[in-house]
Image (cartoon, rainbow over all chains, first blue to last red; front, top):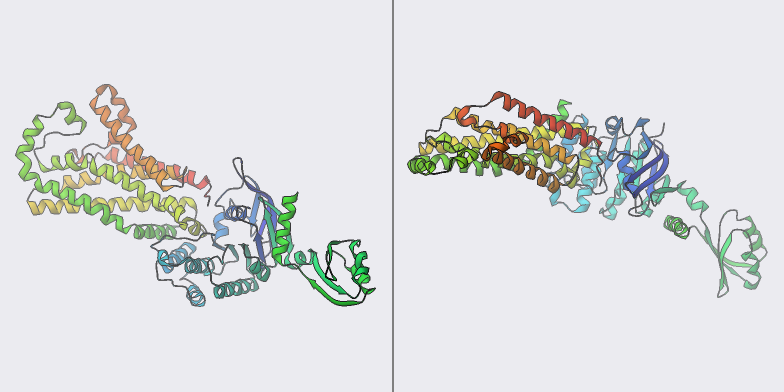
Length: 297
Length: 263
């Protein structure tokens, strides 16, 4: 049974767009990245999953339970870090933890001390006296101290220094290895590429792609730069299927290619190849490619 | 369930611990001052009151000011304490709902297995306790003032006078919950309910000034407030207003359960 399953989830704010027909599933033991710029619909999706806002149409099921009618039972099994974490200026992290532990009916604050040591978080100072990054650490501990089956994280590393980002990514990987499903909304494409198994790209409130990271990168156009002993003979590459952006500069041939590369390799085999460089695009390039396509459409 | 509500009420009261002192001490000191000066102003007061127009005396509930209890009612319990506590009530209940939404706390609390209606119930209950504590502190300081000045304030009637403010103030907490069902902005909730509070007071005043407009007093909770320091607590009015306050909070919880908690 999927940890999260949405069916044409839609939220409209009067005439304003929220999200439209968002459908995806996240399996236990999977880290699912949710990518998109500000205003694309990431937070609206998360708030709908958490029953903080109610869908206009469609449905979401978490652990097989209806996100609206069985919200309380769902929330007993998940941890959530909101995008703009806050808990009041005068409250210390430890007080917040004890309150959440009582609301969750757990004995004590679980592994919170261990996590505080790991993230070097100060649980005894009022949150209003902490920097954004240090508040975020407390938020992460509040979201994870009870070992949830599903973690929903909205921009979790914003404000964290690089060392703590590394520690956070390690924690996410450990949670996944324990069977926890992780739904991670992020702007940080590098962290998504490193920790996520699959990624959903949201644009204009619509989910435009859901792919495994490896497939997404594999499907993307690869960039080739070839140095041939006789560049003049390379013109035939231009007409091969899937080849684009063909150019010859200073005797070096560059082009991009997608799909089956057999024809490209066969053509190059007929030449004296002095040097060859093939590069995969970064997730950022793939991501921007989706947005460029959208704007062009 | 009781564990969750207990935890939420305790947290709410801890967060608002300063309100007890910030509201209870000034009101208490003011009331203590009123009862303390009574012996020295008693003679001149009676003379001054005789010169007041009858309508004005009726409108502000000023009867004979021949004892300290009547003076305490006229100066504090007929206007200042009910209005102050009514405003405190809406601020207190809003802090647990709209204030929590603005600080981000609501999102974190609602990540735990707690229903919105339980959050509302806890906020309303905590407000009821906070109001009682502020009234208790105000009453205690008033009694202390009377003892120190030898004003002879009778404890029973004074306690009834302060206790009678509680359901009235709680009603505005109930209205605050309803307002939070429509808006998550604290300024909107406190502003609108404070407007209703003043509006109800004015309606009651108008009704008392003009007997032809007496019917409009039924729209105001002040119609049922009375003068407990002299007449004792009217059990039906006390219970009725408390019940209406709870009913308003329940309607507010229903609205709050159904609304979007947008970021």
